[in-house]
Length: 97
Image (cartoon, rainbow, N blue to C red):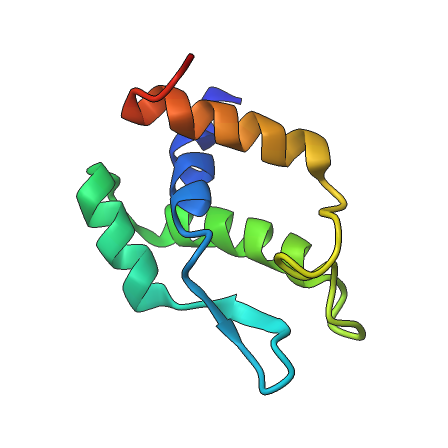
């Protein structure tokens, strides 16, 4: 959906902005890093954008009872979304093949 493209692009750009617990499990995004990435991409972060990012973030984290799929620890349960995200981000920054 077109209205979610900026949220997806920002989420992709924040792949290295995850906070982790002592065991290396992701616990949530570092929002200072998210804001820096948004600024670099020219994406306005308002309440609506924050909620969209949180939906994506919670999907990665799982239901709260488990560590979720983890980032870099297990295959992403949304492999199609990850491939789409990578393609979208590459096109946005001019790295498309």
